[in-house]
Length: 294
Length: 262
Image 1 (tube, each protein chain N blue to C red):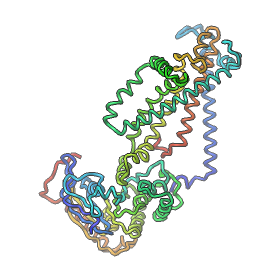
Image 2: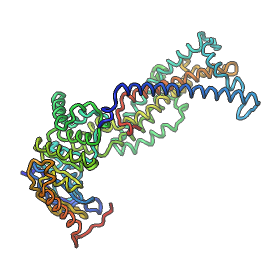
Image 3: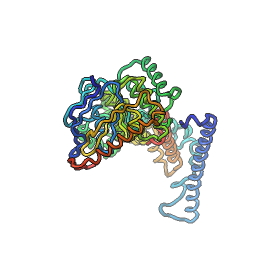
Image 4: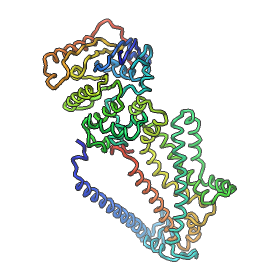
């Protein structure tokens, strides 16, 4: 009989709640452990006067609580407002670049993956260049994109989105290609027996089969797009995003290192937020036997 | 007119001769079992009938046209040993897949899916996903899907091979009921002598290296078959007859043997 039929819904809900509570508890335990590790390392090195691998003091390893406190202070860069408000504003700006870049890159990657999966010649011909595109340092590509798109009178933030897309499309393309070939051989024969067209085989079988692979790539790409957006801001001299903040607080580092650390924290949170959105989408979209999930 | 006409079909995979000069005619409404040891080409013969693989020589006529055209016209439904259901589709969506591809409208699809669910006694499970069902239930969905578009011919490749004996016997009964109800022609590949005798109107015994038909046993058990059929003396006689045919085919001396690579 089906597993669903024997389990009562009440029990299942209770189990779900229990599991969720456990996860939240685990999250805080790990967080506390990391905090303790940081502070413990710091205290031990300072106490013993150890200088390897690097000198520990308030500029290399500020107190965690100082970093959090910095978020509520007014910024020393003098642009006004509490640091947290500035950073959230910057994060929202960077998020827009990253989100547009992600959508762009994921779409291009998906279409490319599907296209390459349909033709061996295309795959042999184009794949080396797709791979080569990722060996070029993003810092070398970024100014070219900014200058080129600048001549087309495109908004500067969009150039940054394109740079983020450049980092995003690759994992999606590769995994889509892999996923398109993952369709079960019998399932393909079944489609043949129904006289399905190539297009129908793609949409009704190959793409659904590829979804777990595609989502694995999207998770990688989601965080990569945030990194791409931040890096993209540097050569395009955009001041409104997290990249701009990083440049500014870098200059103030010897004065007040906590601001840069706080910025990094917000950037990390933005990356995690992107990741979680994809995770949620995956839970909604991918219907697969538990043992067949990638 | 015969539903399937296999004419001097030979199939080679490299140096391995999977089928050698097969002749077989299947009449409308027949239930044919293909039986034989592993490597005798029974599955290959089924796949040739369904145009899932080409013939090396000879031709296959299904419903009076080449197998390829019959496939394009959706003249047959197929059931594999694995249910091969699509994980991301519910039971009812799985059953309606061939109907979608045949461009049935939504209303007609829903009505047919309901009819099929009742036929395989899965009413109430239409919104479950395949992986929430037992193996036997999955295979019933697979049969419903194969029959959903009323194909003239049903091709079944060891459909109950992965199931336990109890489930297998129950599904045998169900399959006979469905066969009588739908009036389609069935070609059924199996390893089990008892299953072949119980289900079929004719059992085609095959022998390996190279794969060929060694004999055909007419099953004259009365219709409809019931649980009691398995206990009739005639049933045992026929089982013995098929078993002897199998051994005869396997031991026949002086036959040319092709080197098998697989």
